[in-house]
Image (cartoon, rainbow, N blue to C red):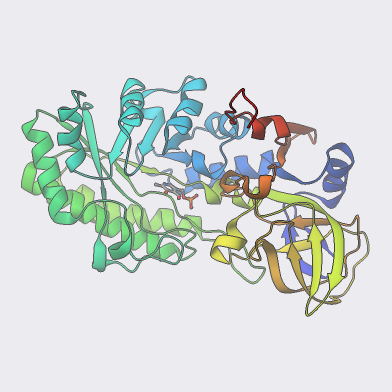
Length: 426
Ligand SMILES: Cc1ncc(COP(=O)(O)O)c(C=O)c1O
């Protein structure tokens, strides 16, 4: 994988500066720019690390980058899609995906979403065991395969973004799972899955191995108690990426090997039929291979130095809502030392509309191009329209170098299309 360094900045760019420059000449900033080759390689690496697992598949978390061309790309590499809402299911359905090509991992789920997931024969990970009763009360037939999401509560620490499991709204307790699977069996269900997701942007490979140990031991326990055979065990997503220059990339191979050891120890040793292992990773697949390309609009100095850009929190919320770090490179030909400390800001009337706070950067002037790294997952997707801001478009750098617009920027008409106005004058 090529790495490109610019101006004393020590974090590499996933796309060559010349290609970013080409994109800037072709498309109006701001836009997210993705790299097809990087995304394909990330999937291949994950698949290779889990090559030992029977019928392994990563279900790409649609919420990370819900753009059809990106979804087509990941599906062409063998991924399924992990959906969490009606419209995400609709995106999968538009691609003619059905059955075990779709995971539906939702919470506080509306009836119409269940109905649609059932229509698509998607694999449903129930967040609440009570939803089996509820569906029946609504005259909705249960799916032939039932899977529950486990929340280990105080048994696990969790991590910053997803929170401590004991405080997280997701999933069911161990005792509830015992009841839930038994209740499903009483209804004649014979096909089962098991799911958990208790970390987000976690870079410690061993954390995932411990999760596998935990979940596989639970599967073995349920097998022993209830005679359940699991068709799949879903370890969720959450594999992290190095947003900061000093951070190491996650050792995917170490995760694969550790999960393999846990599988042998708990699953194979239990005598149960070997289930598929599946994941729902989004971030590690597209995160590092996307970037937000934006231009400096104004610079000003008051109590701090500000670089105002033409993107805003509407295009990338992670820094604003989590204080998340995204590296920033000032695009330029010459190496240049850091000139000072800057806040890089958008134009929203919110003071957390900042891509960087007190960041050491080269001086940037009106018209300069800034590249905000690692926006390929949970980037544009989280955007919103506060202050009437229109979210930016998306461009994909194809493996042959061609730049393809895969989502146009929003227009005023898009924004105003939802208004319902009375005919009469006020
Ligand atoms: C249920 C579920 N699965 C998968 C993911 C994807 O996580 P990531 O993109 O960090 O791998 C998320 C992220 O929020 C999630 O909530």
